[in-house]
Image (cartoon, rainbow, N blue to C red; front, side, top):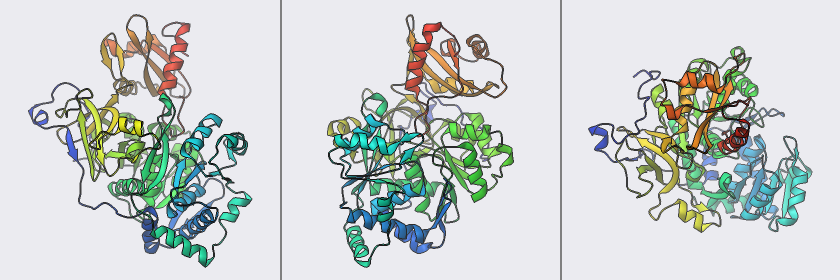
Length: 567
């Protein structure tokens, strides 16, 4: 099969897609041909270091131009691990990390796991209210932080919240005097103590807390173990066909599973090199890093790839070293995927789907899947992962081809939400199935298409409308660079469709009437956006996802100026 063929691109959502599909339940298990790794992350790193001591492990282009071999990374993580032990950190203690992407982030990540500390990832975009909540809720004892986060005085913010965070014993600013002291060369006694602590750790110990779902209330701390994230990163890398020869460019944030698990752990568990192009996403810096380091793999959400492709200097970069990568976070428009494959040379790029609570990958496409598979599905169940599609009301598995809620279970499901057993019970049922809240369809071959969020469903006059379908169509307009569709309040229909549009450079103005004329005859009437707002950018989360909640809020406010008015 030609991997560039556009086939299997339609996603059935009706009651049936034929006898063959309907005869099967929407239930599948991933491959078991490789056993799960039954070790800690630190033990796995030691094996990789022994195999590839002189190969590049981390290349940091954020400013200092650091380049560490595996032997150097191991020695530095040992030093920091011993330093943290001497600071009083014990297995199970929480170490907060509030910093942008850098070699120091990777260093702290691996030093913490070596001593059994639970790393608490803190979003660099957080400010005092959110920072205080996470520090207090997780009971962070040691906070490692960058002194400045973009234009924010992180040190000053920490000083402001510290009196209200009783568990916080130490704050260490990266690059400061105490940080340098922690990295001092450890003595033999310190290394023996570290070895003793490492030997006492168990793969099922919690090792990471990631706060998630803050848009619908206070964030919940998904608690992940060595087994969760080591295996998820390793098997993601296996499906990407990683070897020690790969060089993986990671412009995605490390505080999120995309960067930390699918990124650093996937690469380092295979002896590959992690390349950090910038502290925060920068399209030009990413392209330059790929060229300079001859990267073979590149990660991003669709908006990142769109920005890279739209960079005025794109054609001047040599990206021929690329072959694969991951696109995740939100569905990829067909035309964007075509350009990623053709212009960025990523013929074997894969799509991943999951959530923080599942470590995160539950499904992944394969490198030789057709273009159609990669834009219409999120692939099949990952190794050692079980998935099913159920009726959200009854919990019963639906036939293949029928829409329902995506659920998953297996090694990758989190231990639970930190100190929130009630929320854990709501998310994970008695049989260990994680309720994702995502609507999905499974086809006859086990490929899954995500059709929307149960809560993101737009109901217009009794008609169910899924924004993704409209967004895909709007990407076919020659002047539209990107599109996001949300529901906004309407006195007659209950909800109406609003499209937020980013135009290509030099495009003529585009209003609601022009867009509706383009959609007429191509989309059902109730799917055609009534309101249009043209903007230069979308509000984004720090992990690169569009904040649709904010778009809905802004849309409702904008409508005070009249229906269809462009912003």
